[in-house]
Amino acid sequence: MQLNAKVERLIALGAYGVVAGVLVVYGFLVALVKPISVGGPNGITWAVSCIAVAAPCAALIAVHLALAAQLRTHAATRPDR
Image 1 (tube, rainbow, N blue to C red):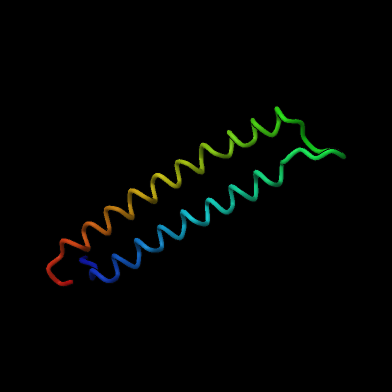
Image 2 (image 1 turned 90 degrees about the horizontal axis):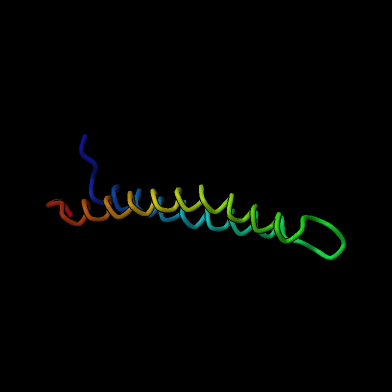
């Protein structure tokens, strides 16, 4: 099944939206485990949590950026632009 070039560009835009959403969720999780003066995790736990959450977020971001780049390239080279 062939997709229209406009649809491919729209799907690529959606992939960029997922990247933005993952960055927002990562920022929220980092802020959630931030050490505060009246309690919460210490600095080491905060650093480990940030790294543990960063790895899957980075993988999701990399995959979506690669897919968006492929879709945009394919949409640009189609004759039915």
